[in-house]
Image (cartoon, rainbow, N blue to C red; front, side, top):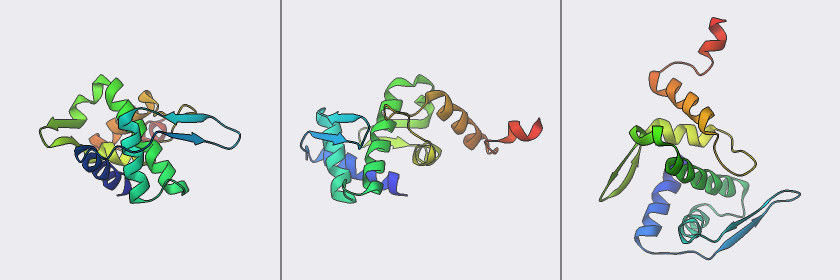
Length: 135
């Protein structure tokens, strides 16, 4: 899975202190995103080295990775979805799958409610649309 590889590449880059340059992402007829935070720049650099930020796939991967870190920092209910150790952060496979498929909002973030719903279905092993089928 590409997101899992990007996560590992970003972890390795941070451990090796390969801090990337501050970047500004300019979207045609859309927002401008400044990656001035050292960690965000490091992670963007890792994705750039892995697949290239000049490609749509690379840019999407970078934004998903940054959105995942953002979500982990603000969603307390996710504490069971990852483990922190001296070796780094281990993510639940369902979390990576959800982050690879769930859409981002205009600010480049995951919708917390949507992710919670999606993950609860994946972990329980039920289809995400089961409620719609019952009605």
